[in-house]
Structure formats: structure tokens, C-alpha cells
Image (tube, rainbow, N blue to C red; front, top):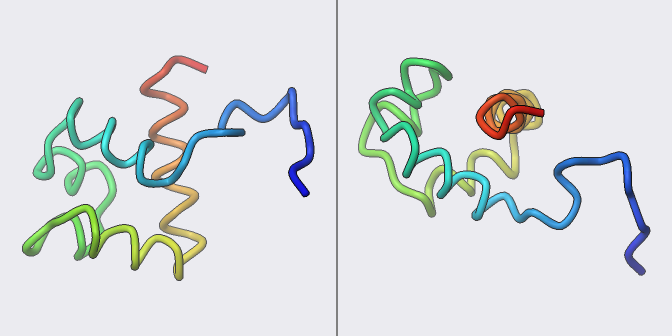
Length: 73
């Protein structure tokens, strides 16, 4: 069951879509500079980064926060 979340700007956006947009906007090297995690700096890829971000709440939060800054919320 999906809850309606009108105050959540990330509602309805998948982690994959969010990450893909950030990579397209910044590139892996800039993304790794802004968020210093190994999956962005050493042999980066969407699939491996998603796996890490899904298991690591603090890193996911940093990515979500950067995304919100990127879209100017």
C-alpha cells in the first residue's frame, strides 16, 4: 500500500532515477568529490552504487540531500 506524501519532494522518485540524474549532471568524479564514498570514486557504476546506497542509510541520505540541492528544493 502506497501512502500519499505531498510534503515529501522525493516521493515517487526511485533511487536509480535520482542517482542517474546526479551522475548525468555532475559526473562520477564530481559526485565522488562531493560525497566521498568508495563506490563513487573507485570503479563507479550505477548497479554497484545502488547496492551500497540501499544498505547504507547515511550515504543514501547524503545522496538524497545533494539531489534536493540539485533540483533547488
